[in-house]
Image 1: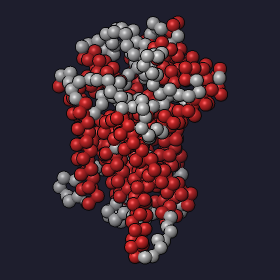
Image 2: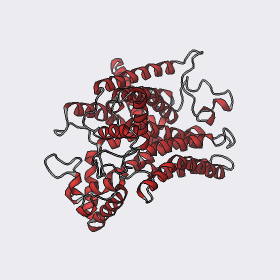
Image 3: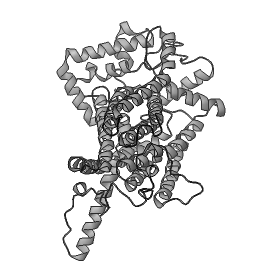
Image 4: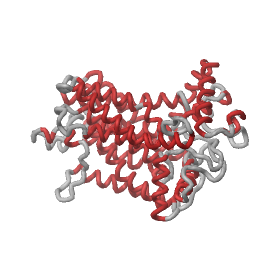
Length: 497
């Protein structure tokens, strides 16, 4: 029975000094690719997983083609495509006609991710206005980076075997495959969130002296958080929590840890500010008022908590009924986007204060949409298949893996390795819980859950491994005529393999 915090190949470098210590800063960004040396078995298998992931995602990109169409869950690609063309033509971040959500023709917009618009504009500048070129670039990057980050996170939390299974599940996850070919922010945002948490876990787990690699990991954490914010500003709500937890972990793991952690946290925030500040300045020049990054929080909170929902959240308003635009009060229409967003947020908060009981019931009703895994009559066949074969398949193993991990947290010993792993598990659970709560309190769609799907994939892998191992033991004992021994992988510290 193998301890799920250890693995023969994962530990082959131990005993070689500080450079071989798991979770060290020295290994923070070591990729599993060694061109001039034989690869261990797990890493050869990882290359196969990456190749399959690329194949799936390129297939998705080719299927979605060299045209922009309105497809389920990716309507935003129409706006990103048009905005990228406007930037290329020298009109800046504006639309030629009145545009969603309430942007007048020719007026500046900050509703959309600046970083993703620039990615599309840069791609179109090189290859011409061909959406397929951008889809293929995104698909290949996602196929390479996604499984590797999933593998790294699974390995950090548990062991290399769990990491490999995590990467395999990630590579074939239906939602990730589909969105890798869609020209929306989901794919790059998920990758940056994975990278941010991988770095945060690595910093929190390391027990090296603070002068090892200096502040470099904190710089990388700031870069990852900044890129994630430039794709979706929501992550800024969670960055302080992540930083606080990492600093707290560092503070009692090393001599002078508190000072080191605070210094590193300031570096992370400084890098984050450097990435965001140019767009804050641009927004001030465009709107004449302070807008940190994007003008979408007010719209989302207003629409997500409008009385039209009653106490039962409506994910997408039905065609033929009232449109989202018609819900905006007449006295707020025609204003610049930044002022409209600010006033809508104020109105949305007023909805809450006027009837807090309705807001509480409405927030609870969003749970059903957020965790939906069953087919729906409102969805097409492809959407229903993707939902059932991805989240529907993974949910039982996710719950099982969470159970194993939580039992381990409650019954773990005080060894250094155990405490390091518990740090990572706790951080992922904190992030997932808070990220879910934010969407339950504001606006919920299935695609908004996908970053949580990505970061909790190691628990899916752990649950799957435990289930397969348990099933294999039972079959073995049945064939031998003996009753299977009852084992608890959490109390044994085992992944079940």
